[in-house]
Amino acid sequence: MQCIQDVSQFPPLADAWDRLVLAAPQPSPMLLSGWILAWMEVFGADVSPMILTAWEGDRLVGGLPLCHARRRLGPVPVYEEVRFLGIKGVGGMYMDMLLAPDAAPRAAQALLLALNDTVPWDRLRLERMLPQASLHSALRQQGTWPGTLIETHSGVASPVLPLPDTMDALIAGMDPVFRSMLFRKNLKMAPRLHAVEFIPVIAREDIDRDLDRLIEVHTRRWNLQGRRGEFARADVRDFYHLLSHRLAEKGMLRISKLLLDGEAHSFEYGVQIGRQYFALHAGISPEGLECQAGTYHLYHILEGLLPHASHYHFMEGGEPYKYRWGAVHQAVQDAHVWCGFKGRVLHRLRRLNARLRSANPLAATTAGAGMVGWMENLPSLIPSLARTAETTLPLLDAAF
Image (cartoon, rainbow, N blue to C red):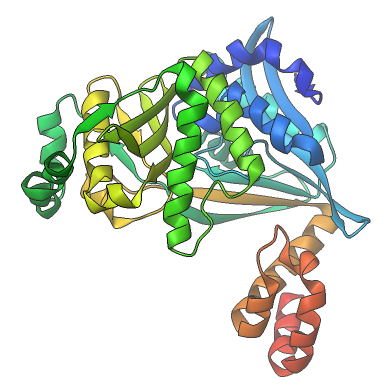
């Protein structure tokens, strides 16, 4: 076993690490070495890497990308947290441990032992895992560690479209009403109104320019709806620029675009790992929306993927249009493991905070979002609790 706590030690392992990603039953862009390195460069200032690796001789047979942080209430250290590395601050896909197929049981056991022994922690956050994730299976087989308790929550929908060998078979699996509208109207609007050109993969020298344009049209669309969009923060934009060049070096980046009268109005940021294609982001202009350019674009993406990909993974979210294309439902899960006395106290306080939010609309409004809401929002909760003592006191009794 080796625990990498200095990110400068990780690049020499990058190729072996990515081979494990390619061999995984369910790979994910978030597990790639390029994602790990780009994320640490942009978001890693407040965490310590804790990348666990399992070896048999000089061969890497397992990996678990984690990071460690000391969570604080103001300047006061409160508890130690370990979570997946590469999640905070960015959207993405699935997380898991990585295992060589011929050494999976041994490597999984070694990684779980190292997870418990390497760094003391009070809370372990394992987010964005599919139900069939290797880490889920390993935890079920081993059970939780002594002195811990685990809770699992259903997360967001992550629909996936199985891709057959032919376009005719894909079309046959679409929703019948959608299929009729697709060929009667949606695929004809853009070519009727504009000169249309589909670029399946942009050139490497155009990555920064086209990514900036993707961000521009994405942000413009969401701003028109009164929302900020995924790329509102500069650090997120910096991350995707770094990530894009790392993925391009590996031949995995698939940014496509659709030109209307020579100008790009629809983009998709995709990553292909083996035969799995992942749509991470999209951007479409208001002009593109008016002529169904996004639908036209996706149709041609799917057509180009056949027969070179087996699955198209939609961006997270259960929007109905994804299922009209023939996607099947799946959802990620989050697991939280609480360790020792402090972990159990945190667990109870977290449950209490959830109950207060549901019981007291004012508290729910003032609390806002946070990694552990009871700590970050305690000052704003106190007046609300005082005004609603009749509601909160029974809940306190039940929680403890």
